[in-house]
Image 1 (cartoon, rainbow, N blue to C red):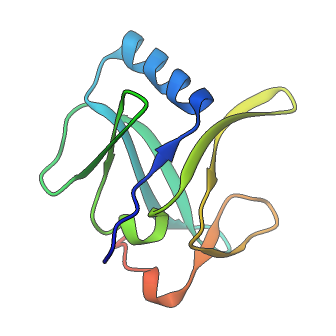
Image 2 (image 1 turned 180 degrees about the vertical axis):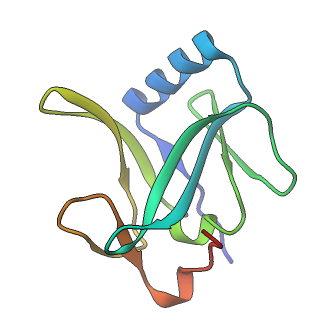
Length: 118
């Protein structure tokens, strides 16, 4: 697999750096899990520590940790931090997505990319 990596917009990097400054931790953990009507949902959390096998990307001062089974589905993504009405949320611009559910909670990728163990 030719890895492209994960990138953050300035807004996303600023938000993560603020969280890490308050909470501490090793970085930002990104993953996918099986859920919803389209099959996969993003997992975004602060990583307390690096886990064996984690792939690591650095962007705008943020260490991004991704488990190897999730990477094929989010590789090449840009993560933004956006306002939607009264709420703020992380939003993925993922070139691997082939379909999304109407509620926006889950997504589908081409069958060759769906290797996560969920």
